[in-house]
Amino acid sequence: MDLKKLSSKLLIKPGKKVNLAKIKPGDTLGFKDKEQAVKLLEKNQKRMAELQYLLYAQNKYGLLIVLQGMDACGKDGTVRQVMRGVNPQGCKIVSYKAPNSVELDHDYLWRIHHNVPPKGDIGIFNRSHYEDVLIVRVHNLVPKEVWSERYGQINDFEKMLAGNNYVVLKFFLHISKQEQKERLEARLQDPTKNWKMNPGDLKERAKWNDYQKAYEAALSNCSTKQAPWFVIPADKKWFRNLAISQIIVESLEGLNMKFPKPDFDPKKIVVK
Image (cartoon, rainbow, N blue to C red; front, side, top):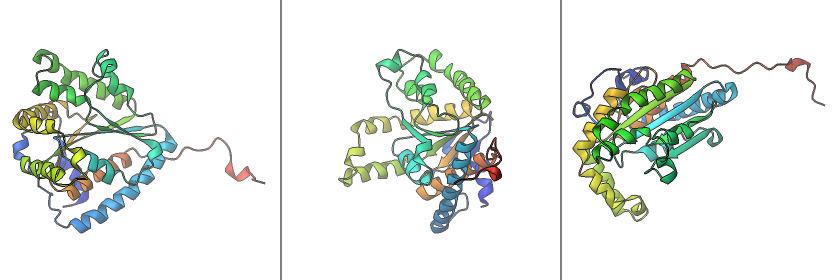
């Protein structure tokens, strides 16, 4: 598989109805060599660092990365592995949990917009505004007539960001139920990972099918030209990391960024 074809293979085209059962979580799209994938990831990490520096210098665009998926799908691991080469000064990571009392006193997008990165920076959402059409739907926290309106509201919000020079990349980390089981069991067996386990995760796991339907609806309704969704087969961590890094690099390269020209002649400056 050509690396350049990864993004098109994983992209959810606008208007496409998504059926997650037909997308294999263990698929690697022709990549069979983990060692080669790790080398390609390292190459992408170096390129990402260069592009981040250019992004910051030009200060024209912002990059927002959204990570969603079932518990133990690898959101934290993606941040740790894929973004390893970027400068932390220009990268902000926000992990969304249940809204607090202040956030509940505002509209559901208030806390999201509040955390959008400034121009020149990279922002990463570990969970996001999509929780308001996912957990809210699965647990009946608001009526259907409320959450069903949010698909359009989210599309409008993301379109506004894109219209203001933000690149919005959304990744659904697609793991199998069996893989989730093994990862949750690993947390229980490893004392250094016990803290990552929450008994509530098992209650959410019991609603697996409901979440799959909710994700299918979100992916089908909210993958747009301005803010596309990519479904990343995530059973194989090495493929997950390679695919996401490649899409980020391609997206930043597509901006054709340039270093700003100084408003003086550097050749005439003498440092004594």
